[in-house]
Figure (cartoon, rainbow, N blue to C red):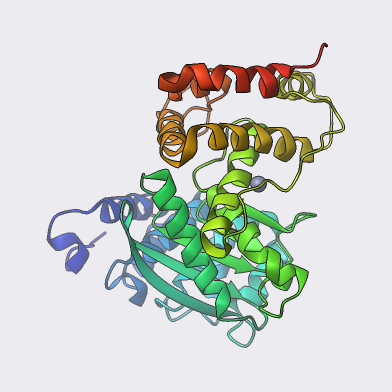
Length: 352
Ligand SMILES: [Zn+2]
């Protein structure tokens, strides 16, 4: 297959270009004719972060369900080729196909779907594409909230986002019972948060969005760790925007008062109130944050994140899950402050 003549391959091979070539190679493996068609589509004339994300979604579809990929590309909206306008929608296709295949149709219907795009430059990630995909009308504020969450959390983490494309889909179809969720390089939220009318949903939108953006860094670890850090980073992001004090939303866990107990319940397959992960994880990290201050806390969770992305090859996930031992290591230089907080929230201060 010829991909020569693409300006993005001419100079030095960027990381995005390398990822894109790899995706094309996977698609070639499943259907070489289709891969050749994709290479010549308008969205690949130049290579933006969104295009790399779209190619990765296509290659994942090719690998998991080649028939779904052929169907998507035969859709009237895409049959003349994917354009830059539609690339953000294509970037959602793999997980939408998995979570709610019936939703593919309205997403590809130009009468229903709209895409709003913004490109920003972040200190650690560089050029980053943001996109909001909607199937009903929304408000301009949502894109500002997305930019605020992405840039604030990236700055606090002090390390590049794992992806330079962040999509936000406002839709009900892929959500199950939750109000927001995170799928790797894009987020989904209920359309009721795409408002600016002073309602409870409008007031909560920034916090919910920041929570989901924080999951870009915090996923595939124990739930209390991922949810606790997402809660705290959402609190910090909202504090920067609205000056409300940094708090966590949940403080009560009916199952017990310590995180070690949650881990034992997880290990035994015992179902408990999922909000315990927000309550105990959130309060643990909030107390660490309040005791250490911005700089030391930020440095600690950056260390923790960097140890979570080291590949350990023991499981199918990228990176290696981190837990309480890696937290002790990451905050080693503040052990005297951190140890009693770990005792209180992880081991439990009340008699067992
Ligand atoms: Zn979460």
